[in-house]
Image (cartoon, rainbow, N blue to C red; front, side, top):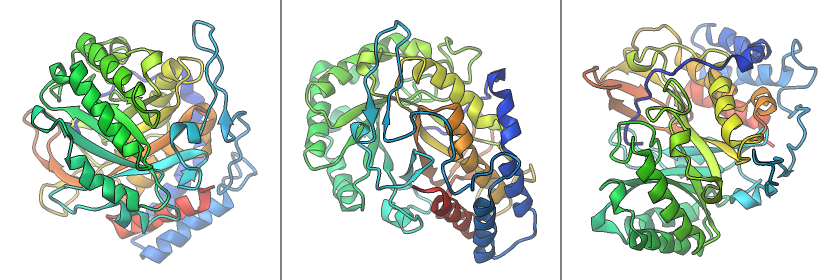
Amino acid sequence: MANLFTPRPGPLNSGAQNFGKKISLISLLILISSIGHSTVSAAATSVDAVLEKGDSSVTTCAMDKDCSEVKGLGRVYQPGLRPDGSELPTWDWASLGLSNENLHVNHIAVGFAPGFRESRAPNTPEMINRRLPKPMAIVGDYYSLRWSDLKMKNLDYRLAEIKRLKGRPVWSIALMPQDGLDMITWDVAHKVALKMKQINDQGVKVWLRFGHEMNGDWDKWGMNPRKFVQKWRILAKAVKSTTSGTYMLWSPNAMFGRSVHDVHGGYTPYWPGADVVDIAGISFYHWGDNSRRVNIAPTPQEAVQKLKDFSTLYGPGGWGKPIVVAETAASYTYDRGTRTPVKGGASEYKIKLTWLHLLLDKYIKQTIPGLRAITWFEVIKDENATGKTPVKTEDFRLVLGNPRVGAAANAFFTNLQH
């Protein structure tokens, strides 16, 4: 993730207003978080009790079960028709490279992006897996493509680590053209495709997330929709003609422009075409109050509104692509280099567990049945929001940071996994 700044979002879609009425589980979690500073075991027990009891005001089904009445939530899902009336292909877990034996909640695959090379508290997939009831389904990663390294040899070191992981997760690689979009020639695209085939031939499936967050202005490849579409199509055609084990994951930042059609913060100018996209995803974080970076808990409709807008365009009813949250987390922010939380008042527990529920509980699956995966950014780092704003410490970690938060997340996954 080259720049974590997500500008202030635009107006929210009112179509998901009823969703907030169904999230009373969140209020239960908030109540738990307000009862003093309990021990790790007490936190885990409290969350466990809430999940086992369920929310009788919403459903008679226990929260550790998938009680959704939405059709098509089994192993095979038929999304329907494209906007032009043509039929869409049927896809299932295997057709996305995923293993149903890895961590899933409410039929949503759960992955993590470890802090492999971070200067503060680096971590590995193995460290994260030890805190989970099942191995992660996706390993998120970032790779800088440069003219000086077209053989992409540094991926070989990471590949050995990925192959050792239990469950053989999908390797989601954010391929970042650090020398600009012009470096993606047919020759370079062919080299990338051969590298992906080399990885696939060793039993590892790849989601290739080229030029992610291209609708923002914080990376060299951003804000150039015509060239992005051209280069994406070149790369995708090279990859798809070389290997069947790599999936093209198109992944803008969650909308922050005035319209989905805006070049700055929109989606549609960057859509390269359904024939060259396998999976549609977004980077989607809870930041508190965006550029001010204060500790405020997510609102009940914060996740579903953005995701519903995106899914309407590119998921079932739109272009029929599987929808993923390619990169997500909820930041808990400190003054730089200290353990002094910034303003806002919400606890780390409240912020992160609320966001986790909003992304994975059965109500979002009912609202967005095409949602198939999320990948949590398991990193702590110092950065500023934008411009001349002060640098702060942003702790995105869910399972390897605050022990109380990690225990609660483990209880959540343990009770709702399938």
